[in-house]
Length: 163
Image (cartoon, rainbow, N blue to C red; front, side):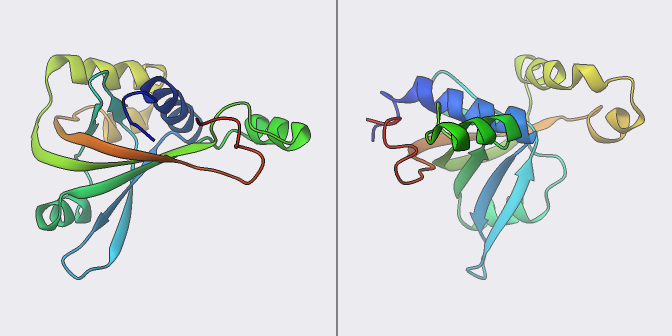
């Protein structure tokens, strides 16, 4: 399946997963050959078929990317209502999840538009103690050049979703 011709559906599936789960999983491979999965809360897809994410706290992910920049992003819609409705009807109305494969770029300082994107996502929490501890000073991002995708599929329940 082509990334570009499916971009609107990919963005929708990815966004639903991040919204319901509050994060995305990023898989990388370390120098020892073992996979490692990192939860990332602030990842955004752009209209030019790339992504960026904020990278302040992960330790192994940057080390693994230095070894091998290939990564896989996994976003799954974990909404109980979404799943319950799908189980009742016997099919998913939209994709339950998406895997995006890409190449991670160099860590860099976030530009203002990128900071505004994450600040909009955390705005409801700005008065909470945890906001200052976790999100007040996010400064660094990493770009991802997306190469391909795979939808999360379930027999007979997702056959109608992807061409």
